[in-house]
Image (tube, rainbow, N blue to C red; front, side):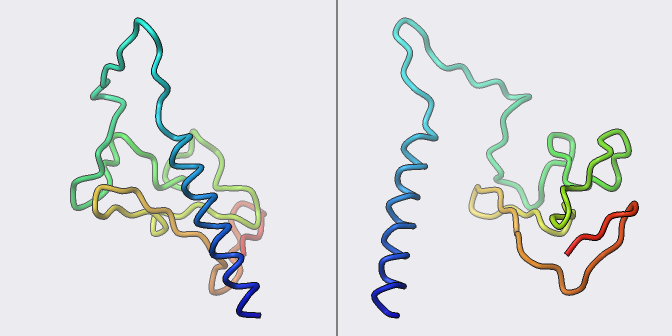
Length: 104
């Protein structure tokens, strides 16, 4: 059992390093990256900038999508800290009925 957990931890660490390496924009010869302030966010405030991010799907009728059951997007699931956006996922304490769909 310990070997299995250790193996999983090592695989997760390797996968995380791979994802981080791939998440960096590639160098393009003859081009330079230019920051577009209106489309960027450093997540360095005390709360999410809701002018840039829609974190309350139920409050935005035009999106008409709360998630694909059993996943439900909720405002409470989003946060920021140390310059990073965090999105909490997991099972809800009890099933929720919204717009004729059950979310767990």
